[in-house]
Length: 105
Image 1 (tube, helix red, strand yellow):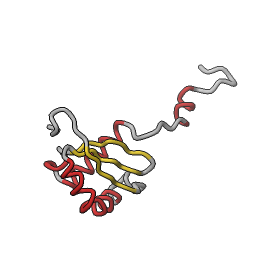
Image 2: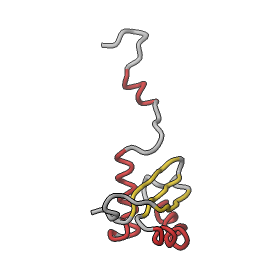
Image 3: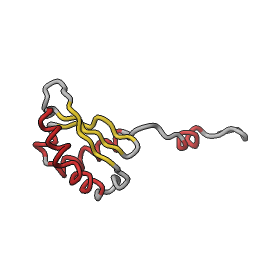
């Protein structure tokens, strides 16, 4: 039992806002991207960052990154904003990146 004048740790933690999404939010974002782009395309992507409403997706190929950035970005942003929990999304960008195996399972 807490002594008077001492605040419970749960109330302190409830006020703390950590930067970026938590693991559950990242899973929801990955599911939304997979649903919008398709399973095959989403295997070539991973979330690089999600801060202040800006989603950055890292692509396994520079050609694919350019293609999506130039031709699919606005449409993907509009479709993702219609999904529950992503209404505050303000921007989607693609960047080139590489990771071991290059394609996710």
